[in-house]
Image: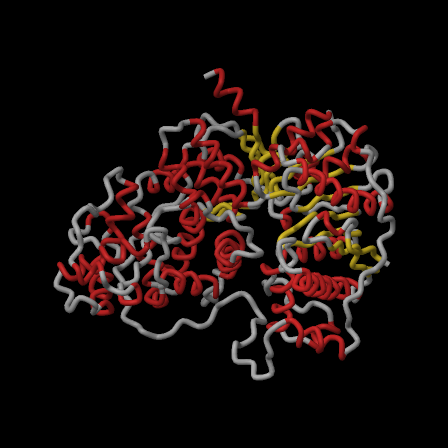
Length: 631
């Protein structure tokens, strides 16, 4: 018990609290976090509710947490400084220089801590899904994370606010989720399970070996909302619930008939969703349950005729209740499940196109010509040529030999050659930043990884506050250890996707931020009117997102289509030293043009922006810097 008491004060979980209506705690991010705490029976955190307004519902909050959990109610001003600079929910660690922020990051951390407290609860770790990647990708690049973490909770909150109207509008995001549940499942042993499904359908008399559509509809109508009680469960249900009921998965040792073994993958029946991400109960289901429950409450009260439009969502909602521990956790959180009528999906109508990513052009653009040369020629005809600004001081270097060992990239246990190249990269970034920084400035190292940039800056600029933001926990923990060895007191560590950092800063830095992460950093800096020093990477991962499209600058938009710009991005990645010199040269030129578009887009928003080639160029195949200063 002494050890448990110590762990209670080790980390503090900060949750927004606005108000409570019919068991629903607002904002919904807080409801979701409380539901996970209850499901995991987690007692590892001291819980602080942060008031967003005066509330009279405080006594009710104790009812949704274990009596062993310490609860405190505070104002925003009472938050530790590092947490004040982040969106909630957040988890703060003593001595208040390490913080985890954002719903997905915090929920994943709660799962890890719950499992560490009791390793026998393997089902808790299973919530993180295959290879522990559930909701790990940031919302900017993953439409699924964006839907679960951001758009559905916000859409349901707005729907609940509108519910006083006679006919509130059903959110498009809910229709998108219904569509998602109709899509075939993709799992790592996909082919094996689909052959088993074909065998099961034949055994059930579903018709000729590959008459899959009829068989699928029969299986689906049998399984809908019958959960564990079903006497004729589909293969998907058997596989899904085998993990939850600690049974073996369906026997697969019997050799399938020859025609099933040899059937083409395209002829195999698709797997159907059991849970939100496919066959297995994951964190995504935990996130969606409180949201969908409160949505269905309003639907049943005011728009009951609309329920038939969501047969898959209704089936999912009823199936979730059969997961061991869910009903108990839900009742602790004031969620009392509805009994929905059985709905069968008989409609073949197409769902509307609800893709979030705008601006992707059709593949049949008649004016499109492949390869980088025609695209580069097209730009040249409009006066846009490969052009680097001169390096401000190509020979400048830190005196690495006089710096403590923990400052050097060699601490990261990399090879001598790689450590030298990393030092050369840091020379370039540190020179530009130190020439811009003033005492008292805040410098943010975005996508900081193990802290190679941030730690050097914190050590060499003791009068500045340096903040490392990274969504990979292990990388940030390594950075903190190096910082602790150096005794740095001017450094913060925030595990979060960058959009959850809300603080003001003066300079943003990013070394090899992949794909659109570079654009996110530049965008964030522009909104804050901060200078930026970025070194892009992984140009092939660039794509249109919910926040910006490519090309970005007006001059490039008038000249290139999205598809032509993507050709530049694709060839910009061909700069590896193993490639022939001519090919590397074209890659470098494409890289410059992509970054020139980024720089000119910043220029159109009041920045003096340049593309500079790092010195020596051999320090990295991705050796461009985009430097921007607000004018």
